[in-house]
Length: 235
Image (tube, rainbow, N blue to C red; front, side):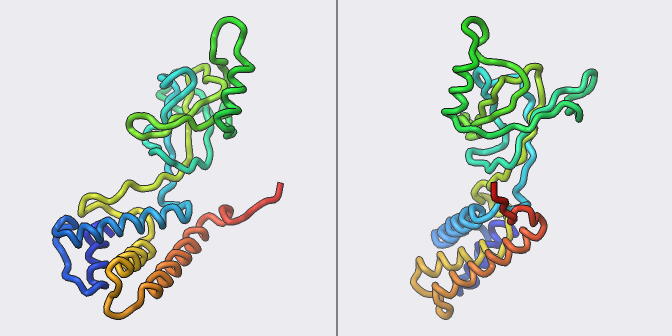
């Protein structure tokens, strides 16, 4: 369902006239904002399988030292796994199946301690080798995430990152929603009902209850495709 469809679905439930564009009038713009509020809340409630991304980073041009940008990751990705592998000789960039390394997350302070303790007294200030750790460093000017690798990759490799990335706010009428529609739709109706004080029928609390039910059902259906995500192991 696209952005305009979502807004019109909310407007109909509020007994308002449909619009031909989200930007048609002040009230449709408000409903558009509430749709995005609902989308952001639903996105943060679960790691939706339809928002899983695989980002490939060629480890050639660091931002600085052993820091690299995960282009296309956004500013707040949920990283599921990260591993680095080396190029096959004489081929286009591709991973060698016999030379891969799964990276372990550490915090920034621990990363700086590793780098400081392993620096040689003279020479290269950034240790090189097969990366085994990564930490989050910040974001770049495009608001993509920067990571620090330790050691710095040598030789050049490919970094494959599996992550969950939230969709940017819907802006254009034709922008399509990535996550399940019903939780977003009914949560937006609940927000709109609370804002105006009534809907002429269903109470605001009932709408929030309906939205929560749709959300729990959507999570259950998505979790069924990845049951390991709901299994917890004791150390």
